[in-house]
Image (cartoon, rainbow, N blue to C red; front, side, top):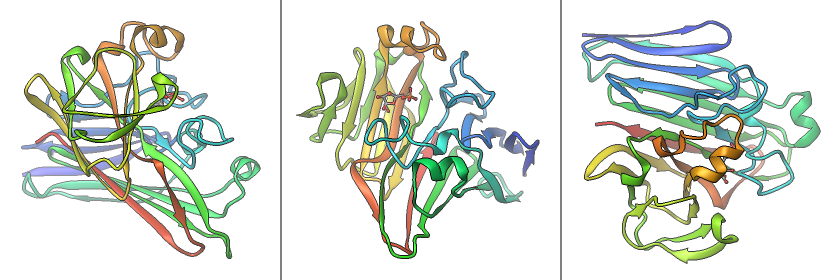
Length: 286
Ligand code: TA6
C-alpha cells in the first residue's frame, strides 16, 4: 500500500508517496517550478547549490517553464515570463492505492497580470498539471488563447536539469540523424549521428526530435524523457567557462548535470483565438 498526498505552505507545494513506494516532489509557486524529485533513493533533478529560491530570479535547476519565448527568440526576457511569475494552485488530488496505482497531482494556473500585460499583450490562460506516481513524473501543459480574434504564436520548453554521475560519461539516445541548431557555433545547422556524447560546452536545439529520448550514463539508462506536441529537444551543458560566469551556478557543478528539454523552439506553436494547445512530458526512472 502507498499513501499519496500533498501539502501547500503558500510558497511551495510538496507532492509525496509514502509506504511501499517513497517519492517526493517540491514545486515553488514561483514559476510553478519543480525544484526537486526524489524517487526512492534517486535525486533525479539537478538544483544548483547557488540557486536563488527567494523569487528574485529564475531558479537554477529543476524544471523552469520557458514561455512564451524560448531563450532569446524574441524581445521578452530570456525564456519568457512564466518562470518568474507566481502561479496559483487551481486543483490538487491524491489517490492512495497499491504502489503502482498511487498518484498525486497538482494543477497550477497563470493568467495575465499587470507585469505580464506590459510586455505581452495577449489574453491567455496556461494550466500546468504535475502528477507524481512511482517511478514517473508527468506534466500536462495547456495554453489557452483567450483573445477575441487574434491568434498568437509562442516558443517554449520544459527546461529540465538532470543530475548525472559525470557528464563526460553521459550520452543522449534518440537524436540520431536529426538536424540541430548549434548555439555554440553561431547557430549553424548540422546533422547529428548516433548517441550524443557531451564532451564540452553543449547548447543544441534538435529539430523534430522523436517523442522519446533516453539519458544514459555508460550503458545504463538514467531517465527516459517522453514528450507529445512539442517538436524539438534541447541539450545544454554550460561547461567550465560558462559555469564560472553564472552567479547562481557553482563553478564545479557542470560535471554533475545535463539539461535535456522538451520544447517548441525551432517549431513555434500558433494557437488560434478560442483554442488550446496541449503538450505533455513524462519523465520515467523505470
Ligand atoms: O536551454 C539552453 C539555454 O537556452 C542556454 O542557451 C542557456 O541560456 C540556458 O538555456 C540557461 O538560460 P538561463 O536564462 O536560465 O540562464
